[in-house]
Length: 302
Image (cartoon, rainbow, N blue to C red; front, side, top):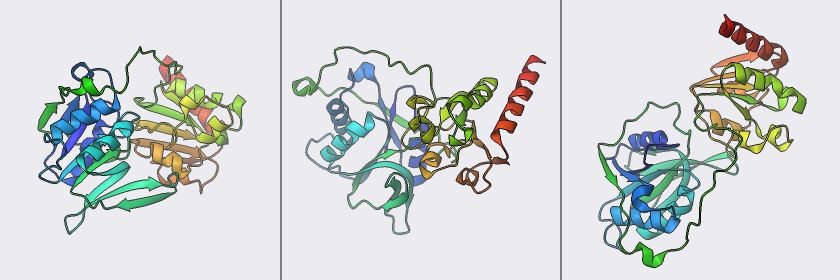
Protein backbone atom coordinates (compact mmCIF):
# COMPACT_ATOMS: atom_id res chain seq x y z
CA UNK A 1 0.00 0.00 0.00
CA UNK A 2 1.30 3.44 -0.97
CA UNK A 3 0.41 6.56 1.01
CA UNK A 4 1.05 9.67 -1.10
CA UNK A 5 1.94 12.79 0.87
CA UNK A 6 3.32 16.24 0.15
CA UNK A 7 6.62 17.38 1.61
CA UNK A 8 6.06 18.90 5.04
CA UNK A 9 2.66 17.28 5.45
CA UNK A 10 -0.39 19.36 4.62
CA UNK A 11 -4.18 19.00 4.56
CA UNK A 12 -5.25 15.38 4.32
CA UNK A 13 -1.96 13.80 5.42
CA UNK A 14 -3.37 12.47 8.68
CA UNK A 15 -6.54 11.18 6.99
CA UNK A 16 -4.47 9.25 4.43
CA UNK A 17 -2.40 7.63 7.18
CA UNK A 18 -5.48 6.74 9.21
CA UNK A 19 -7.23 5.26 6.18
CA UNK A 20 -4.15 3.17 5.44
CA UNK A 21 -4.13 1.98 9.03
CA UNK A 22 -7.80 1.00 8.76
CA UNK A 23 -6.97 -1.22 5.79
CA UNK A 24 -4.17 -2.85 7.75
CA UNK A 25 -1.78 -2.97 4.82
CA UNK A 26 1.98 -2.83 4.58
CA UNK A 27 2.18 0.96 4.14
CA UNK A 28 4.93 2.76 2.27
CA UNK A 29 5.08 6.50 1.80
CA UNK A 30 5.54 8.32 -1.51
CA UNK A 31 6.76 11.85 -0.83
CA UNK A 32 5.96 14.49 -3.45
CA UNK A 33 8.40 17.40 -3.33
CA UNK A 34 8.26 20.17 -5.93
CA UNK A 35 12.00 20.83 -5.64
CA UNK A 36 12.62 17.33 -7.04
CA UNK A 37 9.70 17.15 -9.47
CA UNK A 38 9.52 20.70 -10.76
CA UNK A 39 6.38 22.88 -11.09
CA UNK A 40 3.13 20.97 -10.72
CA UNK A 41 1.54 19.42 -13.80
CA UNK A 42 -1.01 16.57 -13.62
CA UNK A 43 0.74 14.42 -16.22
CA UNK A 44 4.08 14.88 -14.45
CA UNK A 45 2.76 13.80 -11.05
CA UNK A 46 0.81 10.87 -12.51
CA UNK A 47 3.81 9.59 -14.49
CA UNK A 48 6.24 10.05 -11.59
CA UNK A 49 4.03 7.99 -9.30
CA UNK A 50 3.43 5.40 -12.01
CA UNK A 51 7.17 4.99 -12.52
CA UNK A 52 7.62 4.44 -8.78
CA UNK A 53 4.72 2.04 -8.25
CA UNK A 54 4.89 0.07 -11.51
CA UNK A 55 8.31 0.59 -13.12
CA UNK A 56 7.42 -1.47 -16.19
CA UNK A 57 5.36 0.90 -18.33
CA UNK A 58 2.16 -0.63 -19.69
CA UNK A 59 2.15 -3.57 -17.28
CA UNK A 60 -0.10 -3.91 -14.26
CA UNK A 61 1.65 -4.25 -10.87
CA UNK A 62 2.57 -7.85 -10.03
CA UNK A 63 0.81 -7.70 -6.65
CA UNK A 64 -2.42 -5.96 -5.53
CA UNK A 65 -1.72 -2.34 -4.63
CA UNK A 66 -3.77 0.38 -2.97
CA UNK A 67 -2.68 3.98 -3.55
CA UNK A 68 -4.17 6.53 -1.13
CA UNK A 69 -3.93 10.30 -1.67
CA UNK A 70 -5.51 13.29 0.12
CA UNK A 71 -8.48 14.65 -1.82
CA UNK A 72 -7.19 18.07 -2.91
CA UNK A 73 -7.68 20.13 -6.06
CA UNK A 74 -4.38 18.82 -7.42
CA UNK A 75 -4.88 15.14 -6.58
CA UNK A 76 -8.41 15.23 -8.01
CA UNK A 77 -6.75 16.22 -11.30
CA UNK A 78 -3.87 13.75 -11.49
CA UNK A 79 -5.19 10.73 -9.52
CA UNK A 80 -7.56 9.59 -12.34
CA UNK A 81 -4.62 9.74 -14.78
CA UNK A 82 -2.56 7.62 -12.40
CA UNK A 83 -5.40 5.08 -12.16
CA UNK A 84 -5.58 4.80 -15.96
CA UNK A 85 -1.82 4.25 -16.23
CA UNK A 86 -1.95 1.55 -13.55
CA UNK A 87 -5.09 -0.10 -14.92
CA UNK A 88 -6.64 0.55 -11.51
CA UNK A 89 -10.07 1.38 -10.15
CA UNK A 90 -10.43 5.03 -9.17
CA UNK A 91 -12.53 6.01 -6.14
CA UNK A 92 -12.79 9.71 -5.29
CA UNK A 93 -13.25 11.38 -1.91
CA UNK A 94 -13.67 8.32 0.31
CA UNK A 95 -14.74 8.83 3.91
CA UNK A 96 -14.28 5.26 5.16
CA UNK A 97 -12.48 2.04 4.30
CA UNK A 98 -12.66 -1.53 5.60
CA UNK A 99 -11.76 -5.11 4.65
CA UNK A 100 -14.69 -7.54 4.76
CA UNK A 101 -14.56 -11.13 5.99
CA UNK A 102 -13.67 -12.35 2.51
CA UNK A 103 -10.66 -10.05 2.31
CA UNK A 104 -12.26 -7.64 -0.20
CA UNK A 105 -11.74 -3.90 0.08
CA UNK A 106 -14.76 -1.72 0.71
CA UNK A 107 -14.78 2.06 0.53
CA UNK A 108 -17.47 4.52 1.63
CA UNK A 109 -18.09 7.83 -0.12
CA UNK A 110 -20.82 10.48 -0.33
CA UNK A 111 -23.02 10.80 -3.40
CA UNK A 112 -25.85 13.09 -4.54
CA UNK A 113 -24.35 16.17 -2.83
CA UNK A 114 -23.74 14.20 0.39
CA UNK A 115 -27.39 13.18 0.71
CA UNK A 116 -26.49 9.47 0.50
CA UNK A 117 -23.55 7.25 1.41
CA UNK A 118 -22.38 4.66 -1.15
CA UNK A 119 -20.35 1.55 -0.40
CA UNK A 120 -17.94 0.74 -3.22
CA UNK A 121 -16.17 -2.59 -3.74
CA UNK A 122 -13.53 -2.35 -6.50
CA UNK A 123 -13.22 -5.26 -8.92
CA UNK A 124 -9.58 -4.64 -9.85
CA UNK A 125 -6.49 -5.77 -7.98
CA UNK A 126 -5.12 -2.23 -7.96
CA UNK A 127 -6.99 0.76 -6.54
CA UNK A 128 -6.29 4.50 -6.53
CA UNK A 129 -8.41 6.41 -4.00
CA UNK A 130 -8.46 9.97 -2.70
CA UNK A 131 -9.36 10.41 0.97
CA UNK A 132 -11.70 13.21 2.02
CA UNK A 133 -10.04 15.75 4.29
CA UNK A 134 -11.59 15.59 7.76
CA UNK A 135 -13.16 12.18 7.22
CA UNK A 136 -11.11 10.49 9.92
CA UNK A 137 -10.83 13.47 12.27
CA UNK A 138 -12.26 11.60 15.25
CA UNK A 139 -10.20 8.44 14.73
CA UNK A 140 -7.02 7.53 16.56
CA UNK A 141 -4.07 9.24 14.91
CA UNK A 142 -1.80 7.07 12.79
CA UNK A 143 1.94 7.57 12.63
CA UNK A 144 4.01 8.00 9.48
CA UNK A 145 4.82 4.93 7.35
CA UNK A 146 8.03 3.09 8.23
CA UNK A 147 9.38 3.33 4.69
CA UNK A 148 9.22 6.62 2.76
CA UNK A 149 10.45 7.13 -0.82
CA UNK A 150 10.99 10.54 -2.40
CA UNK A 151 9.31 10.59 -5.81
CA UNK A 152 11.78 11.49 -8.57
CA UNK A 153 11.25 13.23 -11.88
CA UNK A 154 10.90 10.80 -14.84
CA UNK A 155 13.82 11.06 -17.25
CA UNK A 156 11.77 11.59 -20.43
CA UNK A 157 8.97 13.73 -19.00
CA UNK A 158 10.15 16.89 -20.82
CA UNK A 159 9.37 15.21 -24.14
CA UNK A 160 5.69 15.10 -23.15
CA UNK A 161 5.34 18.49 -21.48
CA UNK A 162 1.64 19.40 -21.37
CA UNK A 163 1.81 22.91 -19.90
CA UNK A 164 4.24 25.66 -19.00
CA UNK A 165 4.08 27.64 -15.77
CA UNK A 166 4.45 31.34 -16.59
CA UNK A 167 4.29 32.57 -13.01
CA UNK A 168 2.51 32.38 -9.69
CA UNK A 169 0.48 34.91 -7.79
CA UNK A 170 -0.91 34.48 -4.28
CA UNK A 171 -4.70 34.64 -4.15
CA UNK A 172 -6.14 37.32 -1.93
CA UNK A 173 -8.20 35.28 0.53
CA UNK A 174 -8.61 38.10 3.03
CA UNK A 175 -6.49 36.33 5.62
CA UNK A 176 -8.98 33.47 6.06
CA UNK A 177 -7.28 30.14 6.80
CA UNK A 178 -10.00 27.73 7.87
CA UNK A 179 -8.17 24.56 6.85
CA UNK A 180 -5.41 24.98 9.47
CA UNK A 181 -7.38 26.89 12.13
CA UNK A 182 -7.34 25.47 15.66
CA UNK A 183 -10.60 27.26 16.57
CA UNK A 184 -13.53 28.25 14.35
CA UNK A 185 -16.76 30.11 15.13
CA UNK A 186 -19.34 29.62 12.38
CA UNK A 187 -22.33 31.83 11.69
CA UNK A 188 -25.45 30.08 10.43
CA UNK A 189 -28.67 31.38 8.99
CA UNK A 190 -30.02 31.59 12.55
CA UNK A 191 -27.91 34.69 13.28
CA UNK A 192 -30.69 36.59 11.49
CA UNK A 193 -29.07 38.73 8.81
CA UNK A 194 -25.94 40.49 7.54
CA UNK A 195 -26.03 43.04 10.36
CA UNK A 196 -26.13 40.23 12.95
CA UNK A 197 -23.05 38.34 11.76
CA UNK A 198 -21.03 40.52 14.13
CA UNK A 199 -22.22 38.37 17.06
CA UNK A 200 -20.19 35.49 15.60
CA UNK A 201 -17.28 37.72 14.60
CA UNK A 202 -17.02 39.14 18.12
CA UNK A 203 -16.97 35.66 19.69
CA UNK A 204 -14.38 34.52 17.15
CA UNK A 205 -12.16 37.49 18.04
CA UNK A 206 -12.48 36.73 21.75
CA UNK A 207 -11.45 33.11 21.09
CA UNK A 208 -8.64 34.00 18.65
CA UNK A 209 -10.62 31.92 16.16
CA UNK A 210 -11.35 32.09 12.45
CA UNK A 211 -14.83 33.10 11.33
CA UNK A 212 -16.73 30.46 9.36
CA UNK A 213 -20.10 30.48 7.61
CA UNK A 214 -22.76 28.00 6.57
CA UNK A 215 -23.81 27.87 2.93
CA UNK A 216 -27.03 29.93 3.40
CA UNK A 217 -24.97 32.73 4.97
CA UNK A 218 -22.66 32.75 1.94
CA UNK A 219 -25.46 32.36 -0.62
CA UNK A 220 -27.26 35.34 0.93
CA UNK A 221 -24.11 37.44 0.68
CA UNK A 222 -23.69 37.92 4.43
CA UNK A 223 -20.07 36.67 4.30
CA UNK A 224 -17.65 35.97 1.39
CA UNK A 225 -17.38 32.42 0.05
CA UNK A 226 -13.90 31.86 1.48
CA UNK A 227 -15.58 31.56 4.90
CA UNK A 228 -17.86 28.68 3.87
CA UNK A 229 -17.64 25.40 5.80
CA UNK A 230 -19.11 22.21 4.34
CA UNK A 231 -18.78 19.65 1.57
CA UNK A 232 -19.03 22.45 -1.02
CA UNK A 233 -16.70 24.74 0.96
CA UNK A 234 -13.86 24.02 3.40
CA UNK A 235 -13.49 20.66 5.16
CA UNK A 236 -12.22 21.55 8.64
CA UNK A 237 -11.04 19.64 11.73
CA UNK A 238 -10.23 22.27 14.38
CA UNK A 239 -9.75 21.56 18.08
CA UNK A 240 -12.81 23.72 18.81
CA UNK A 241 -15.78 24.35 16.51
CA UNK A 242 -18.57 26.67 17.69
CA UNK A 243 -21.75 26.69 15.59
CA UNK A 244 -24.05 29.69 16.08
CA UNK A 245 -27.50 29.31 14.55
CA UNK A 246 -26.34 26.49 12.26
CA UNK A 247 -29.13 23.98 11.65
CA UNK A 248 -26.73 21.28 10.47
CA UNK A 249 -27.49 20.08 6.93
CA UNK A 250 -25.70 16.89 5.89
CA UNK A 251 -23.45 18.95 3.61
CA UNK A 252 -22.37 21.10 6.54
CA UNK A 253 -21.88 18.14 8.89
CA UNK A 254 -19.62 16.46 6.32
CA UNK A 255 -17.39 19.52 6.47
CA UNK A 256 -16.88 19.82 10.25
CA UNK A 257 -17.93 16.63 12.06
CA UNK A 258 -14.29 15.60 12.45
CA UNK A 259 -13.67 18.53 14.84
CA UNK A 260 -12.29 17.54 18.22
CA UNK A 261 -14.85 19.51 20.28
CA UNK A 262 -18.10 20.83 18.79
CA UNK A 263 -20.28 23.36 20.61
CA UNK A 264 -23.70 24.17 19.12
CA UNK A 265 -26.03 27.03 20.08
CA UNK A 266 -29.48 26.89 18.51
CA UNK A 267 -33.08 27.62 19.57
CA UNK A 268 -34.35 24.46 17.86
CA UNK A 269 -33.75 21.38 20.07
CA UNK A 270 -34.30 19.15 17.02
CA UNK A 271 -31.62 20.82 14.90
CA UNK A 272 -29.38 18.15 13.27
CA UNK A 273 -26.26 19.97 14.48
CA UNK A 274 -26.92 18.58 17.96
CA UNK A 275 -26.41 15.03 16.64
CA UNK A 276 -22.66 15.70 16.29
CA UNK A 277 -22.21 18.31 19.04
CA UNK A 278 -20.28 17.41 22.18
CA UNK A 279 -21.92 20.34 23.98
CA UNK A 280 -25.28 21.80 23.03
CA UNK A 281 -27.07 24.92 24.25
CA UNK A 282 -30.77 25.27 23.36
CA UNK A 283 -31.21 29.02 23.65
CA UNK A 284 -31.19 32.32 21.78
CA UNK A 285 -27.68 32.73 20.38
CA UNK A 286 -28.01 36.52 20.66
CA UNK A 287 -28.17 36.10 24.43
CA UNK A 288 -25.61 33.32 24.87
CA UNK A 289 -22.88 34.36 22.41
CA UNK A 290 -22.47 37.97 23.68
CA UNK A 291 -22.37 36.64 27.26
CA UNK A 292 -19.58 34.24 26.30
CA UNK A 293 -17.74 37.05 24.52
CA UNK A 294 -17.95 39.31 27.59
CA UNK A 295 -16.74 36.48 29.84
CA UNK A 296 -13.77 35.73 27.62
CA UNK A 297 -12.83 39.40 27.32
CA UNK A 298 -13.08 39.85 31.08
CA UNK A 299 -10.82 36.86 31.71
CA UNK A 300 -8.30 38.16 29.20
CA UNK A 301 -8.19 41.64 30.69
CA UNK A 302 -8.04 40.23 34.21
